[in-house]
Image (cartoon, rainbow, N blue to C red; front, top):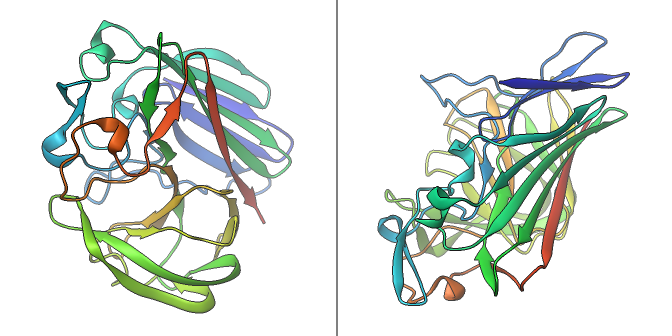
Amino acid sequence: MFYKIENEFLTCEIDDMGAQLHSLRLKENGKEYIWQGNPDIWYGQAPVLFPIIGQLINDKYYYNGTEYTMPKHGLARKLLFKVKECEGAKAVFSLESDESTLKSYPFDFEYLVSFELKGKSLVNTMTVINKTKGEMYFSVGAHPAFNCKVGDIIEFEKPETLATERIDKENLIIPEKFPLIENSKEIEITKEIFEADALILSDIQSEKLTIKGENEVEFTFGECPFLGIWAKPGAPYVCIEPWYGVNDGREVKSDISEKRGIQHLGEGEIFEFSWTAEIK
């Protein structure tokens, strides 16, 4: 079911299945800024990523000597969220651990995904609450897809020198890094740039970027350790993905606590991050 929020400038719709952003429209002209999904290209729109990001080796991980199975990008994107609030310009969705989640993720948690319109901006905040009697390990991230065209530009806030990590055919990280830009702010969206799948970036100096084209969106991602940029080659959208975690490489880890990019919460602790999309 879709839930709608709005303010003077924008309307926004969210699907309670996966707490997925479905629509962001400018009221003055009805322009849609979110990819509307197409199963012939990519069915998704803005999946939430929790409690892992990317792919695990053979979809498996270990915790305290026990093997668990977890699908790509985690459980949350395919589960129904409860609506805790939906009024005016703000909506909050909640996913809590239960018998089903504990079979593949042995931690008690609440995962909140909120959407709030402020002026011509959408602020999406993700909150992870550890309700386990002890420690909790997790990754969390976002995957929103914005309408754009081949030839549009992604412009970082500051000049960057970046190399991208890549994934192989099994969605696992390749050890080699590949040069992307040198002392430049701009990445051009070409038909070829995503032929080897997503750009996986780290050590970014900027905290925001702007998608420049017919639609212009300023996207603030803050100090996230990884930023994914992805689309199907030649498709009319681009995903900007702040990640607190990353795909596995080929090295098998004996415990999820050793996984690269994994986040940690003590009992009762809370983790929160936000991204903002401002229509320019």
